[in-house]
Image (cartoon, rainbow, N blue to C red; front, side, top):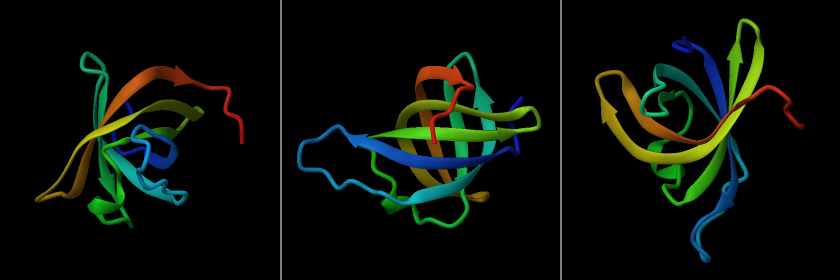
Length: 101
């Protein structure tokens, strides 16, 4: 459904009080989408995996052929495999089309 779509990830807030807030926008591509798990597997294009916090809430904007949709969630896993720098993004609130900024 969303496989091969381009994604931008932006941290919205930190879960931990003294965590590092990352203001950078990260570009990724969707490898697979699992609606039953409410998770998206992403391939980081230009950012090293340690830059992604496991203690942050991220906004994910997906560029589809029908326009841009968004969702919010957390990165649950990050690892290297034969495809590259992979992250498991857990969706916390569903998809929405009315994007602000």
